[in-house]
Image 1 (cartoon, rainbow, N blue to C red):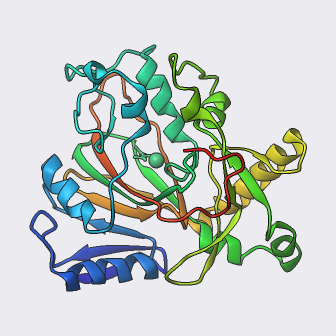
Image 2 (image 1 turned 135 degrees about the vertical axis):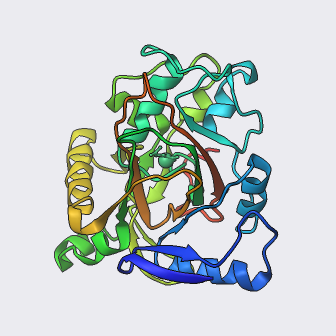
Length: 296
Ligand code: OGA
Ligand code: MN
């Protein structure tokens, strides 16, 4: 496998590897080393079935069930395995979702800068997104480097935020867009979990900002003060010098580390144009802070 930097120290393109086939331990180690050195890897021209995507993803840990699969009726889902995140604008019958479709409105939350599954006590490790159909225009995914954003803070700010604990819930990111319709029986899925705002990567020892649209508070702070501060930090962390836009081609697989990056979807004509991307995510392996109260 060969890596060429597209965005120095942040995004690289990988070639010389077929990720649809079983990998050797050396290939897995090379990808992990690449993920530590950069934080986003792009694999071009990798047609994958859902099974191949799951098999490739399992090289990096246990797959996570998507929240939407846990909260919705299987009959409403186009992709049946609970580990396959349906990042498309299609319904269970393969038709474009209507403007007022509940799932479409929920999915619009991906347009806010976030880290996947930060609303879970362990967050997510890597996410892997495979492009099966791409729209004719728009629909980029943007990434922001939370290590570089941390490094660029002044020392006073670094000291002030070192021990802050944030509260994350899917309900906070969706509330930002005015969405609150989760269906009954899902209260446990929206209960906030706690994370350190500054986290240290287990392999590289680098510190990064653990920011996400799912944050709704800072422990011990009044809510408006916390949200205003998180907004300032997010604005800092998503300046152009810390970000990269990925323009999708069919059969791209993009892999990112949720512990050190944020990402967001960009607009496209989703009422006319099909965009079919499929995501797998690796479960996080450690909590960044004790959970008080314990939450799933
Ligand atoms: C995701 C996500 C962004 C996009 O798959 O987790 O946020 O561009 N996707 O669709
Ligand atoms: Mn996401």
